[in-house]
Image (cartoon, rainbow, N blue to C red; front, side, top):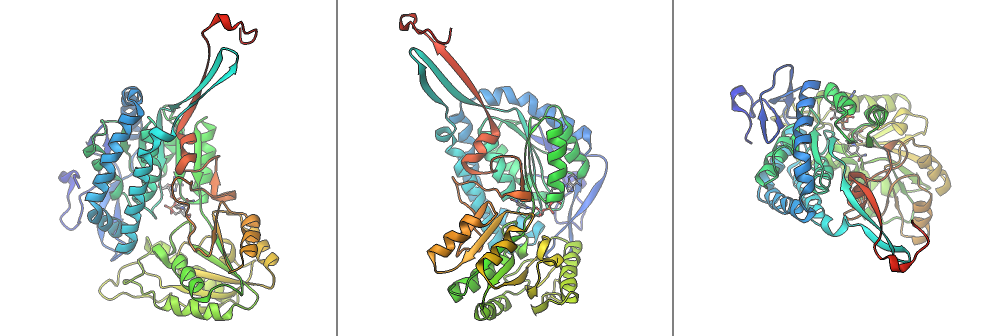
Length: 495
Ligand code: NAD
């Protein structure tokens, strides 16, 4: 990484980070915080907590770059993302290793993350075909035509759990659409954001079009308040999504905020035992349960005890430090273990307990083992709140309608899945579940491009989705032009 080496501290693997503004790194003054590797608890870098002044500087640079970038034909803008896509592929292993280091996920999970980032870049290269207007004769001799225009300077605020992929949900589409952009990565995983800036610059993106401002609350609030920013996308917890949505819409920006989740998997007695057990285990433990699409609550309808037994066997094959990564921080580990202890005290039964996970030679890493908790009731905290760790709460329902009532009562609505061999029952659930992304015999039902990613209820604030075709609406505005050229048409309308 081309980081500013003047700040390098010997014991840290990476130098102290700088913001990336107007095509280069800027030395930062002020307050810095440590960046930890969850794998072993080491401090690997330091990240600046940028002030409003830094946001001002980045907005000024992005504003200056906007007219020239917006004037480029979209086909030219897309060329950058062909090259960027190839650079993601070229640096695949290095980018994946960086994700694992700063986020704690396994190297296979990090590789999968980069594969999705590549898909995102590929989708952006299709925008010249998709981001098109329409023309129609609306009266004799009168044509109405619409075309899409970029918004201006836009911002993307991202969470810790996908340091490379979530920025790539927004960056390629927003920039190919002609906007200039400021990324504010999670201060817990800031390194991948700088690598994205470097690769975009290597791909030929002009200076000022993409900027990275590191920081926390002050930087986010400055983004929400800055009059020079036209749109804000946010991905993170529901608590902060509400803060950002309220503040940025209050300043008349276009805003889309994706929040947290509590995803229910409804398991019916006719479900395929092996497929259900392995899918549920993978969904609850993948990325150490730190996915907004992770299985968090399983609703067991009737007697599915043999599936639960099999699921427990599957989870016991998932070993911290081997095929299970670390959670993001010491505080996250304590929070997750606290949920388990509280559920136990409230009378739930712990079938698989991940609380005392230790990894040899990584004693200071932040690990929680897979945990399966049965006989959770709907009023328990663990049934309602997002745990964001490798923990599955099993709730028992005697009928499918009761299971759906449990699913429908969640304040969230990101994903819901059903496991059954009956097409009719699968459709029954798909029609009635209160979630934006539905799975049938799939534990992590992420829609792939060109379908779009986005939940319902308190999992998303704002209209439209963040990826796919839906994102085109978000990152552009429509201009409608009505013309009449031939007076001989003698139309008496549209004078
Ligand atoms: P978070 O809300 O704590 O942080 C997200 C961003 O907001 C970060 O950039 C952070 O610096 C900033 N931030 C934090 N506190 C703030 C405050 N008080 N004011 C202003 N800005 C603030 O989220 P996280 O812990 O980084 O990520 C995990 C959460 O993200 C989970 O709830 C998960 O479900 C959610 N998530 C949702 C999706 C989705 O698509 N719905 C995808 C990924 C993650």
